[in-house]
Amino acid sequence: MRLLTVKGLDKKFKTVHAVKGIDFHIEQGEILGLLGPNGAGKSTTISMISTLLKPDGGDIIYNNESIIKNPKAIQENLGYVPQEIALYPMLSGRENLMFWGRAYGLKGSTLKKAVSEVSEIIGIDDRLKDKVKTYSGGMQRRLNIGVALLHNPELIIMDEPTVGIDPQSRKHILDTVLHLNKDKGMTVIYTSHYMEEVEYLCNRICIMDQGKIIAEGTKDELVKANNPKTNIHIKIDRDMESAIVKLKTIESVETVIEEEELIKIISKQDEQLFKNIIQVIGELDVTILSMDIQEPDLESVFLSLTGRVLRD
Ligand SMILES: Nc1ncnc2c1ncn2[C@@H]1O[C@H](COP(=O)(O)OP(=O)(O)OP(=O)(O)O)[C@@H](O)[C@H]1O
Ligand SMILES: [Mg+2]
Figure (spheres, rainbow, N blue to C red):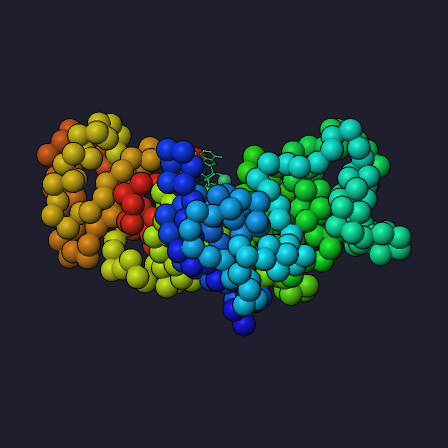
């Protein structure tokens, strides 16, 4: 069942056209990934879905109803986890949950039950009595997610929930997303610029860049649609700059970039490719230390679509 449809959604800030008439949809029970680099327009998009920001154009349909005309249609069913932590640092974790639970209209034994269920999901029971200002970044994130779960929403939207936290909390959050989806039947929109997370969690992915959705599909579909391409990583001992200039002269080569001491090449299918690479690098006074063919992944899809890497 179609839960949400975004049609021609558009948002301009004074000088920035942040979201440029995008279309996408979410089926009930999906984990949809919104993947894109800094400034792509992810937060602006989900702020509009969460009714915190008014679009300049287009519509958002939730369960057959326009949420632009009737924001209530989504508000009661939505758990929104903002990119910035929104908690009271001087209150304990438990007090924060109680406060936000009341804000959602929960009270009495329903509130207590919701708080204890959410505490179990986010797994910080032993620290719930402590003030939030004493929590690590990862624990604050987990509590922030807990706040969005108190009213047991049918759709949960998370905006880059794992940025800048410890690996243990990161793993916990990813597992929580899967648990909420598989065991509680929640539909999820997961925003990230980490392609591994999106690959791991999401049924379907929208890749966003510069205010547009530039590709949409399952990981396999995205990779296939951008095939046949060959991705090769080369490591040489010196003079990467000259090598990159030379490699760009090979006709079948589409993109060459340098990242983390590697030269990354995306090329059309070409039987002569290896031979040509070795030939042009052979014209320089360098040694090839390694040369690997990479399985295409979302990073190579992004690179091939934009000529840029998907990183901080
Ligand atoms: N309130 C605002 N006023 C002016 N410009 C804004 C505002 N909010 C966002 N922008 C601009 O709109 C563009 C999209 O921003 P947005 O925050 O949606 O990107 P994002 O994909 O969430 O990026 P990040 O990964 O950094 O969170 C950026 O150029 C940003 O600077
Ligand atoms: Mg953002």
